[in-house]
Length: 186
Image 1 (cartoon, rainbow, N blue to C red):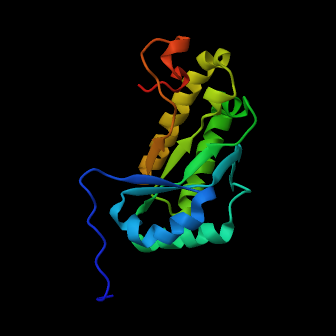
Image 2 (image 1 turned 90 degrees about the vertical axis):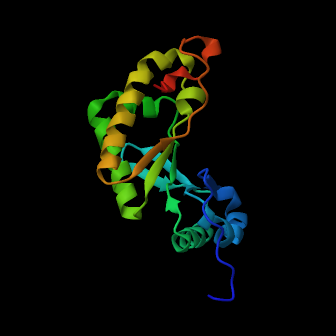
C-alpha cells in the first residue's frame, strides 16, 4: 500500500531469530514490522518424537502458529524451522548410531522440509549434552557427525540450508572443562 512506509532494508549483518511457541502472540504482533529486515526466522515448535516423526510441540497454540507462519510467508523471510530432540535420554543417540535408522531420520526431516516448503532446517538436538551423560559422548560424537553430514548433503541437494544450535565447546580437548565436545565443531 502506498500509505505505509516501506520495510527497513535488510542490514549488512544478517539477522536471524527464533519464534518460540511460548511467545507466538507477541511475535506475531510485530511480525509485519520486523520479519522483512531478517534473513531467517526459525519457528520453535517442532519436535523429533521418533525415527520418522516430526511433530508440533503439544504446548503450541496451533492457530497462533498458523498466523505467525502466514506473516512469515508474507514478509519474504526465509523460514528455517528448529527441530528439538524430544525423545527420552539416549534414544536419539541410538537412532543416529545405526546407519539405517539414521538414514530414515534424515529422510523424515527432508520430507518435513519439503512438505512445509521450508528454506532450511535448524537442529536443536541438545539432549546429548544435557540428558545422555558425558560417558556416552565418545560413542555419540561420530554418529552425530555422520548424521549432520548426511542431512546437510540431502538438504543442500534441494537448495535448503542446515544450521545446528548447540552448546559451546571451549577447546580441542575432550575434558570436563572443554565444553560440549560431543558435537565436534570441526
